[in-house]
Image 1 (cartoon, rainbow, N blue to C red):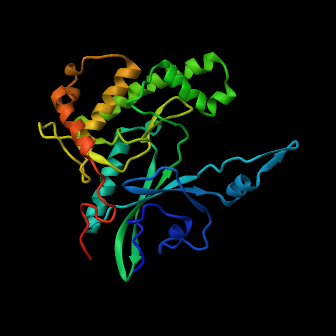
Image 2 (cartoon, helix red, strand yellow):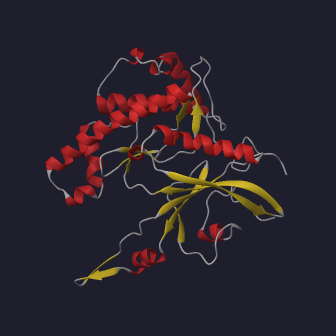
Image 3 (cartoon, rainbow, N blue to C red):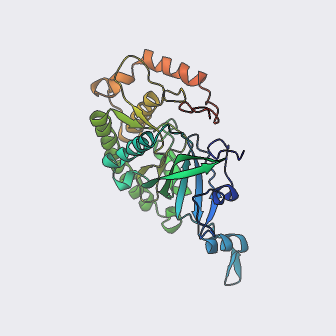
Length: 300
């Protein structure tokens, strides 16, 4: 039997083009992104001519350079198996809920679609998404995030190559802090009104951009927020709710200044020292479940 794409550790272009719902011949090149998603495969969607320039180089005034092909979109193929079309539609709605609260400056927009995935004589519902490509550097909530660290991120991005001035870097930093304030407010509104929070704790889930904003790029995992003594675990056994709220608090403290977490109605339910110790113990014990056996899988 042909191996299920949801079980593969990674996909090649041949794997993608071999899917029954893909158009052939393909108009685009599909290349595996450097990030490996636990919940989805991530493929760059590229123009063939851009890939050719990257491989063959471009000569200008006698100098040859190899410009990296910039993705048009990011193709996500979700690993989740659904028991029914209703379950799949509910998953789409959970993902779309983020768009209600985060504006385009703070969210990598995505167009989700459900396809009929044919494999070994069976047909199943598969969730995919075409997401905007975001340029930027990873914002790690548990890193220093002081002025020097943030300016170092700025200098790694293309914007610093066109504006070498100290004034340009300071202006970027000022914009970032202002937009972080908006991002935090929008996430908190989502938590209060929907009792859900997106995964802010995963490595690479948040980027800072050349325009001076913070952007959520991984929208696959939306966790319930119970405000209960019990620590919520996601379907793979990770305390994503607690860690996401901790990540939010760290961003707020490090970029906007120290605050008393006990005065915040959200933080005071999750940042209790004893609870955080329990969460860290769960994180240390966490082992991702096998890709071949997600929580909602029904044996064939």
